[in-house]
Image 1 (cartoon, helix red, strand yellow):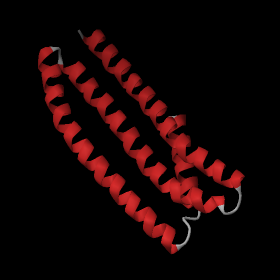
Image 2 (image 1 turned 180 degrees about the vertical axis):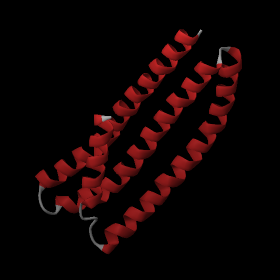
Image 3 (image 1 turned 45 degrees about the vertical axis):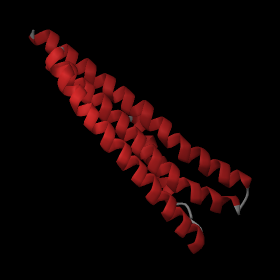
Length: 142
């Protein structure tokens, strides 16, 4: 939860940075639209396959494993979505920050990239925690 909270804090810090002039903002919007279209298309395809796999796992193994597969896939998808969104928005802000010096730009770029890592770790640990909780409940009730 600490990794997710700090990732959220860094996200707010990055998004509060100056996004630059109108030309930079226009280019950034086009990049954001392209990234969103890419993610939506990719996740739509992956979701269709994921639903089929979740059903196969649920019926071939057991419902707990099917649920945990969905939890893991959801955590992974969320980390990717947040990471891509923040990274794309950090790009233009990093370019603007570079006009004030390399130190400012590197600090912003590092924090923007750290969001992805923090969400991957935080959501991964959350998924493992949920798996442990579901596993222990099914063992104690079975």
